[in-house]
Image (cartoon, rainbow, N blue to C red):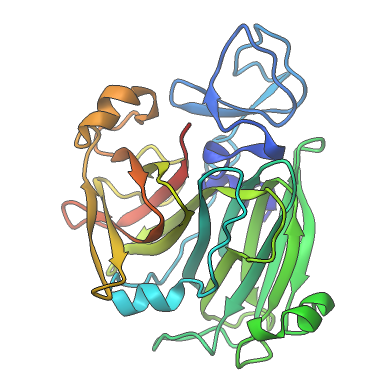
Length: 365
């Protein structure tokens, strides 16, 4: 399965900034665009495949690729999703000190995803923006994970990076066991887990969009794995996480996850969930609802922060960010100021239905 298609489906292109350029924006016919630029035209998102002179409006195929087309028939389910109790969220989130070396007052710090690697691998992605690289720790837990279900015995992680000049995702890093990445084993021994089969790598990642694939090194083996990305306090670069997205299945359990924001001031974040409008060939959530909670260290509990069911439920977003709406009013969107801290995410169907949903977080200027 091509990594290009895999990452597109996760929605990172819709919420990305490639190679340190500006985040996705509404198309401006009087503006020229560099290769790898991201624009919105109505409800569609496009990436430029070469330099674009002014006036060449998408979907002009000479200059633009519609990001939804290649993803239309892809199915990459996350078969097991954690519940949203406090212990589960804290167990799946990175435990390192926040990375405060950001070019903005606050930044996305960490993302952790636990999913089931079965017929399909666990898949994810992220976008880094800025003028220099970002030092990132990538770790996958299987047997050492704080989880009572089936666990991946020998997780292996493959990272790919989008190359705008070839319009392809290309190999960046593959790590199977602790010690495979020599510099990490030498300089970051404290990041190892109790199982040497769990891969860890600390790498400098240039601005760009990255795809992630996690599977068991033994062909056909299945189980849950926890995939972690976070910054390090010894990072002196200005690169930062920009966009994070997750598509998963809502079944017996809701889609659940966690995100951490670090810094000294609030960050304006767009939170959006797609169901029916998602470019996906499988069952889709008909009426997605998102609940955001925030961890309160003084009570050791996650407390209510935001609940949005439909477009328009968050009044200020409907007034000031109408361009962020999808074509289905049942899909929730909110643009909110989020203070530094750890947030839990819960997505389910408002009527108790099942299907897949795409959850998106990205910066809003």
